[in-house]
Length: 388
Image (cartoon, rainbow, N blue to C red; front, top):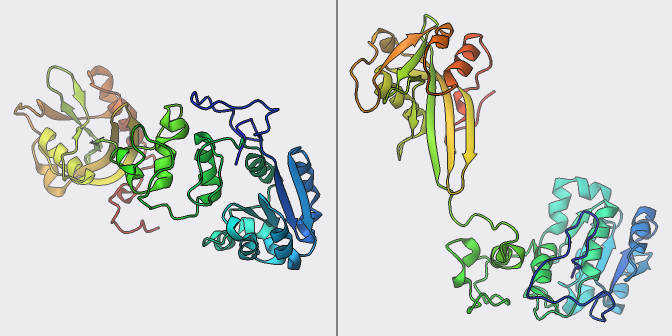
């Protein structure tokens, strides 16, 4: 239940074309009520000060946490705030007292210790009777309460989680994650908002939007649905992985590969083949392009460069010839992969045509003994954790 007018740290008003907003004097603008529970919350000056700034918000108090059930059942509340540090978890009691509106009440645990404890936060938010929000920041309470009590209530949609009515599409788009982010949403039921000429999940593209309504709402409606805000990725991003290797022999010389079409020299490097892992590809590339066997000793850089419809992943390894590789002759017979290869000192680069900057950047870097990351820093997901 929210306003699209700007709040503390909030966003501006939606530009949705199909929803007409009443002006500020309209009777459709909501008001709301907040109940502060427990003496520590009732007398928290920083909290009461920010709530007083909400002119359309009625704030009532319940000094004793023992009386919370009576206070909640006597009013149609929008927000209840309690101190979990002092009074324990009152969320189940609050929701039970709210009756049929139990899921439409926004419950805030305002507690310093609970807000800073990972274990307490998850405990307070667990289950259908848990708190909606755990915080000890009065400005965050202000922002949440302002959204809840100030929304326009003339919309045509009803929240399928809590049954609250009067939502516009944009309001429902914000309400659901604010109130129900901890609720299961894997139902394949109907979406309350028409999706073109259908109201089924089946309209969604191939994506988990089809079996998760919160994901469907987030991507197919509101600002993302209108193209005003990015949608989540619809499918796996195609990634083109490349492996490059800075190879240095026992004499301190570096390996260069002579490129085709008179493009000059470059370090051994190429695209990774399907089913190949990066390290296997790196070793294969050196053998194909330079004719020798190597072993990898570390990682210099991992770069990920997104493009419009794909991304490039490039890993630069450091390697050295194996025992057999030291005795092997470098490639001299031209083929599709390369013209040949040569060993050079880093000082020889000035007089050579190179296809890229990698030799001039990484040869001096490696020669001076700068940091090289271990191979384990770039490995498969199933590999054991890096040992220190």
